[in-house]
View 1: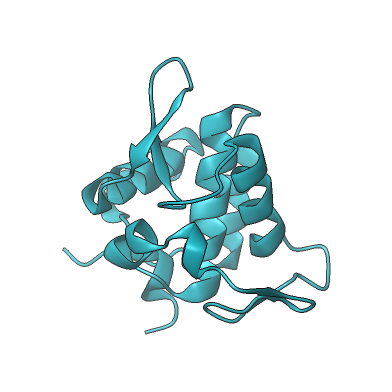
View 2: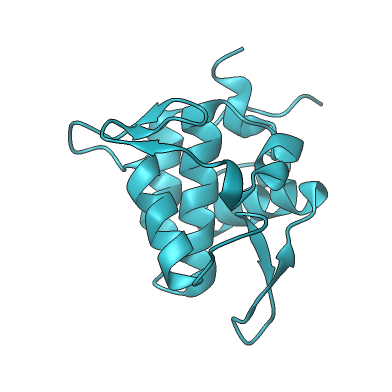
Length: 140
């Protein structure tokens, strides 16, 4: 079964279900960057800090602008994640130990499970219908 898209409404529901943990900060950035950049599992997992190019409009690497209204801002979420995780090089999105310690780069297959977990936590019907490719489905 093809992955269902994560549109703006669902994205907002998922954001509302996240807590204040380091995992929630990472997941918020991953979700918003994935949707804003129409990126899939492999593309998200491959992003390296060294390849990020910032400008006054936002993130230029994949041309993601700062949010201009009350919508969640992917660029701010990414900056928050990089700051709280104290990341300065290597993979942007990392796995986390149960203790919350930041580990190695996240595996592409883990992104689909993270999206399903967020959908489940937000109590959205049929979480198995969503996955990592749901983040770019609304653009295809």
